[in-house]
Length: 218
Image (tube, rainbow, N blue to C red):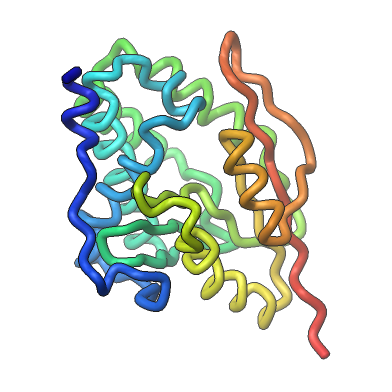
């Protein structure tokens, strides 16, 4: 068995890790949230382009998601979690753009956690997505949503979206996300997002920035 296959052996999922168990996450949930996201994105084409070494990608993804979890929990973002099954990270309307200090922390974390060799590629992708990000109107941004592979296509992803999308509808806020695979794009379209453009990574797979308008009340 290849090392990457061994690392991705199915995680244990107990009966409480079901769609009905989705709730808003707290900082204490960060380790399980990070692990579920890393496993969920392991086969993603864009993140495979960022981190092409199969034997190290899971560890690299864990490090990257831990950095973003610290930003989300530390700067007024929101997360939903389904126990050890999956999670979603959201940034509030005034927090989606990384400030220079946070950017420096991300660069330092990537360099120490994933190695200097992969930092330029990851930062190019980060810069490109930020440069294409719409500035107005104010909106919530979903950087990441991921579900353990054996729990995908079971309604968990949709359940993870609902608490924050419901809040967006109540507050009249649009939502923004970048789809990183055709499957992810189709999932987001089923949940009310529409493609607004396509981003072509250099010698890499495409991404699709997507937009969801708040539901009309009444």
